[in-house]
Length: 194
Image 1 (cartoon, rainbow, N blue to C red):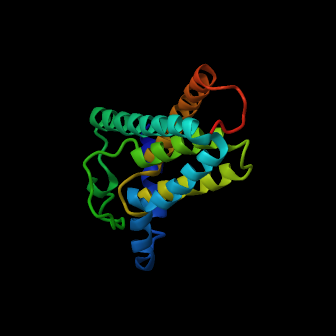
Image 2 (cartoon, rainbow, N blue to C red; image 1 turned 90 degrees about the vertical axis):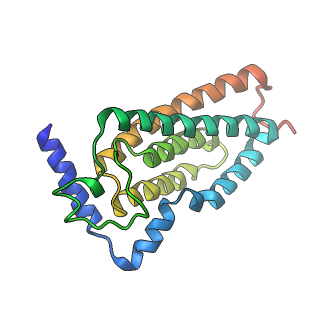
Image 3 (spheres, rainbow, N blue to C red; image 1 turned 180 degrees about the vertical axis):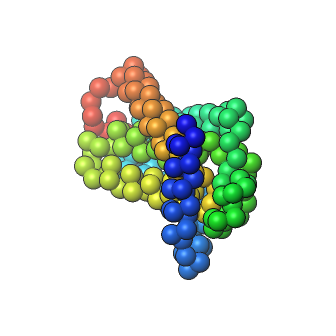
């Protein structure tokens, strides 16, 4: 376990120190939850075009539940494991670039990474039959958001990978819930029911 933690520290320092002051504002923007609003709006439009307004409303209610679930589970893990963030850990913070607006206390696991991964899977599974290139676009966005957490100095790569594993699981479970509710309450046709 100690070797795994040491590898995580070394990988963090490598990835974090790839940063350049010229890119700091960009990565702080990417990591901001409000930066993805235009992307979310585009996804809502895609959902509407693919599903109609009733199923889109159902999918958005479940999106809210997905984000709440990943966020609250991350908080539980952070409180339980109490792993210091790299921007607060002696022996690491002195060698890293910290460009975040603030540094929380505990970092295991990354809620940003978990929420991003969950949305990649949940929305990707819903939309893949309508837009064949949706998964690569969603994965690119999710990885961008996830890497931003390492770049700005607030998460180790292990926090991000753990977040992705948990997020993928949650996203898939909510996709199954969406399909169950869709079959139970909506017509089985794949066309829009407006």
